[in-house]
Image 1 (cartoon, rainbow, N blue to C red):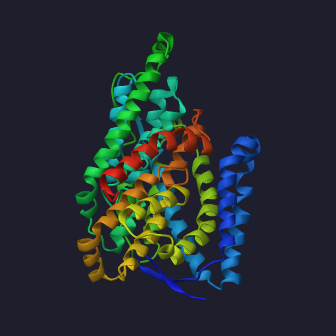
Image 2 (cartoon, rainbow, N blue to C red):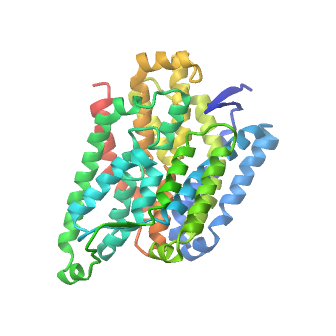
Image 3 (cartoon, one colour):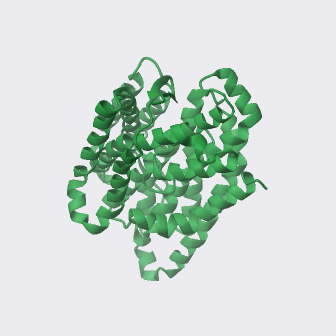
Length: 436
């Protein structure tokens, strides 16, 4: 049985090829997330934790007793801890910031808001931008809120917007930790980002305009409006800065997570209940995300390990194939580890090591188009499902808690990803990564 090194940020652990049958727990969990809200909605709302925990325990047991590779799962556990500390702290801090926008939520204002979200996603990260803007976005559109509002918010703010900096999206940050220069992504992806974002914003504008024109005059008259744009809870920007600064701390171990938790605690304790009430803040959305992603992080390990071992056997030979391979799996799995596995596979294609600084320079100078394809795919395809990127499920949960209608897992994919996002992804491939 062959053993390959799994190269991750600052770590090198063993990857032992799993039995492909152990990919089934992930598929079962994915099916439960997709179907249970449709088949047994009330039961799922109360007992959603019943399915993820046993599936996660089964996979952990397999790696411990079956493969004798508990370090692999421990490493995944550390990744989960970092993930939930980042997501959770941003959720808590953003819950103490109340933003209102002047005027009526018309198509132009909504499009501008999403465009601003796409830009600041590269400064605050997709998670930070999404958590800051989702609540005011819901409030200003609640009088005519439809599923496409939440989907395009996830498309643009929670995913595609953050493709220009390592801060923007977790996959790009992993690349930065591996040695990709900070501004390399901006220099090589800005045009691709601009094309994708403009297409998404244009599409959203015309869909929103159609919806807006259908609204009755009475509904428009009852819509919430504010006389001024204002931000309350500005002191929480300090705690937000603490979290973003902590992202770059690598040593000593767990200092980064301690700072994030401390920022969340400081924010929660110093924010008035009145302000939390204006944001309808509760811990339920983050608890749901934390529980479901325990199952996702654990059960996706066999799928990622199988991919790592078999990447060279499934036809990954050019930037286009890496674009589609990394993209499709970024939508089905979490996009950060998928990015790292495909980056490692791309280096291996040219007999290079992703952990060797000299090899990184060679790869960027001679094969940089592969990294462009992997980076864009991981970020943009992360919008394809609710589980493709961390903020997606968080946005869904906040919207549901606010009482607005959101699409089901399958509805998201079949009603929005396939007809709206996929054509744009295909166009980006044709322009930038196809053999033409």
